[in-house]
Image 1: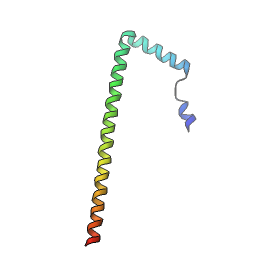
Image 2 (image 1 turned 180 degrees about the vertical axis):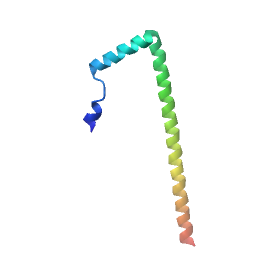
Image 3 (image 1 turned 120 degrees about the vertical axis):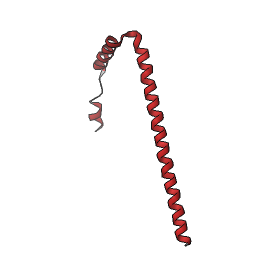
Length: 77
């Protein structure tokens, strides 16, 4: 399975071609701006993912608390 995933990654020569095409399309002056925007987008995505993950975990904790409280009420009754 891992070897199949590695087959889709670019090798050294392919990476050089990709970098060359990016340089041709965007020019040397636009690349830092492009990378900054890409970094900002990735950072925002990771922040959103962490927020959603935290909300899901908190919801699971609340559900567990409610289940424990219901069990206590049932055993007391």
